[in-house]
Length: 306
Image 1 (spheres, rainbow, N blue to C red):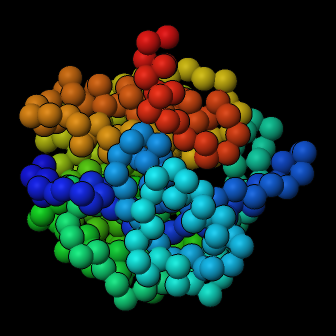
Image 2: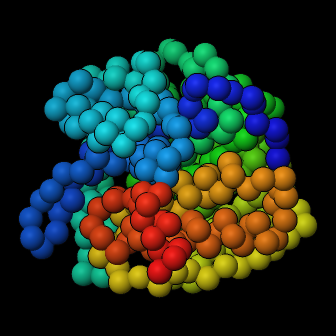
Image 3: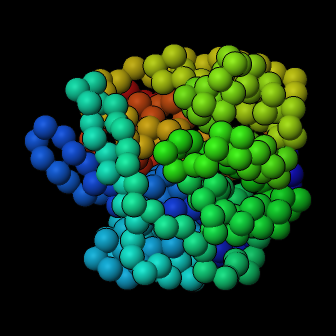
């Protein structure tokens, strides 16, 4: 794992990626919520008291202002150039009876020609933004810029309906992996990328591409973590499921917090297990209530002592 840059008075973490409005259809009607995986991660980090900057592309329309208010209200610093889109993107989610969601998108992704003027301790990228042209090239450029100087985390959060061919998407993914220190993906992501491999086999392949840690989340079956020296499985935290929106992003935010605060023991098995258990707790809190309502540090501490 690369050493963190010594920073003071600026965000510890920069998240780069899409922000959009989730238009949620349920049996009770239609509601709108700020969303997008990277935006949710930025929000979740701020809720966990991590100083966070967010580089994205939203409009100055009502939906863009709703996203901005949502994120800044949690403490996220929206970086210059982020409010540059003609209109704010949307994702329409339709919820099934078991709380699972299917999505359709109205999304344009293009980063403004700006870049952070400092290096964060950690750069996180993910989801549609890492695949969708023209903005994906800007995401890759940022990862290349930070790869030797910051810890880099990546969550592909695969949305097949927005990707090109399977070969093209996997090539983009595999080109980004060597620029990262940590790759987190769901078992569904792994199955789409590598349909002939088990989640564990996919994780071993991904780690072999040049990253230090691969984490595969498996819903109620917990998560699988793999380094060069260690393979561990950590159970999920039980929860009554309202819906699954934001669960993976809550896990990612708590995983990042764990990486930032892990101390000098690196990726030793006890540290990995502790980090995964905290991330699973964050996901469990999130699925227990509607929407991407990620937990605060106060809620996490309360669950730890309950």
